[in-house]
Image 1 (cartoon, rainbow, N blue to C red):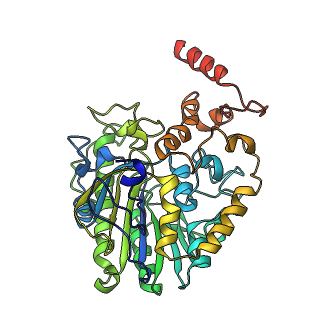
Image 2 (tube, one colour):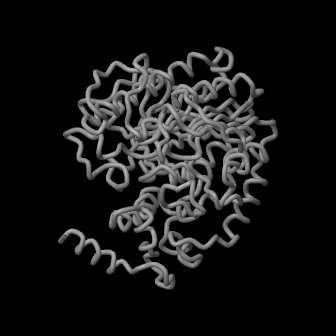
Image 3 (tube, rainbow, N blue to C red):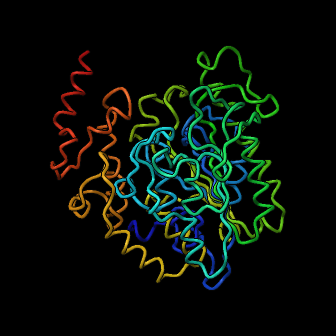
Length: 441
């Protein structure tokens, strides 16, 4: 069976292709009204930490996620990018990183390159192309803007009607218990456990929005800083500092996220839940510092090994006609989502096609991680490539990013595999030489 025949495109899951791995179909019948869609993204959560995948003998306890998988379809081979911002940008734009320009985690507090405001995001597609009015909200971690691109208003400028959450990771002394929260461009201090507050905000938005709606919930959990969650949210026996027992503290954070996810799903009124498609995914693999044997820390977040890019994907809702099944098709975040969401919302094909042409033809902003336009039509990945090839080619630059002490230091070393005209990018041979010298020291 070919990839085209076996691929079941995930997401809001509006396409009605057959999944060779699961035997069922996912997607609404032609002419039906769009459903609500709840898209949930966990931060730094690979398949090794979710027991239904059987990737590790000691996964974190996730009874609510496991129950959600039993209600819907679990995708066995879903691949993200190796870090958070590139995956989130790909999910929300339906474009590969070399096109949307995000190839590393964004330092949102700096005036650096971020997701450009002329990028077409899912909220914009749903609002502009659907025959039905669709309310859109985003809650939790955004991590797509910067001081140079949108600032605190970046989510709203990208088509989100209402946003409340964090602009990125919890850094510079921020913790899960004390952090800056942004609400529609305004900033305030919050001391409510962040995972709990994000679920509170999600429930409030579900109650406030008219149907149909689209809600994006991006958890900060279980990303660092490692910590002990409120005792009521986990069952782990924690002792010592998180740095001393990182795996146990990480498990506690995952369990706390699962508990709050259960509260979210239980808090959705039955009539609304019956008309809601739920999509859950991880944005990249588990960090190496929290892994336990037999997992290998080097095959983790930030790498293109499966431990870095193979993540959970669950789709549940009334349009899943074979609940409790598994799909063995190959699915990739950059390619699979945009078309699915648009089909779910029954957006205008004319609007989408027109925008696609203008998007493909417009010039891209200068960035050290972008190839030139002539390369984009040759060997660099694009949607016309076979999916397996696109995944392999899309992740190729990350091998270069493994060299050096930081993403910022290594991003400038990346170059197009077919083009050497970028003077600010070192050649691959020099990258290899740098890797060799680093290894030698």
